[in-house]
Length: 268
Image (cartoon, rainbow, N blue to C red; front, side, top):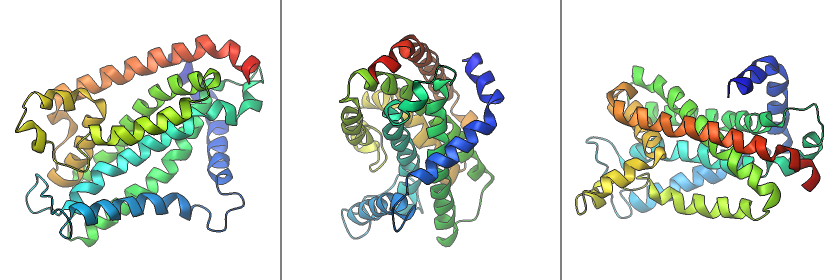
């Protein structure tokens, strides 16, 4: 991990240039360009807000004086970021196969390059989230800045998993489809669209089940930052658990990636 950090510092200009090029490359030949990247997530938010909001099932968020939409957005925005990291990074070695075959290129940087490209899109959604809260009459809080910390936490968690999925997908082509299915199922394993009390009131043991999912920490953190104003150090147990799992994923994922690296060029 320390060698990876040194490599990032040494080649930071190249990483930023490749990330910008990757972001532009997505929209080559498209009339509306980057607009398509934002339409689907915004439509998804609108659908869930309609179904579970005042015109649908009228779900009540667990925070008083907050509409369902205001409660939904901080939960679903980091999920969009995470799911894009996983979808984009899983097939990155096939996408950049010409760089993988170059002996001198440190291919461990490829998931980081794609992650930075995804971060540009995430920055737009953070801006939309802030504007939505302002137009809804919410006064800015110091805790809003904390979403940058939780964005970093999401990026680290996604990167650790990406080293596994991207390495496996070279040898097992169906990995991309499996990741997509797991993400569709995984969004319901975190209380993003629903209040966890719907289940924990009936079965208190499920509270432990929810918190064992590292992404629970991120969703709760975004909502703490935007709604309640709580800071991450007010969840010391969850913070330590999340970073222990994430750092372990990064360490083991990078070791796994590097152990398979000599065989990538032969298969690709």
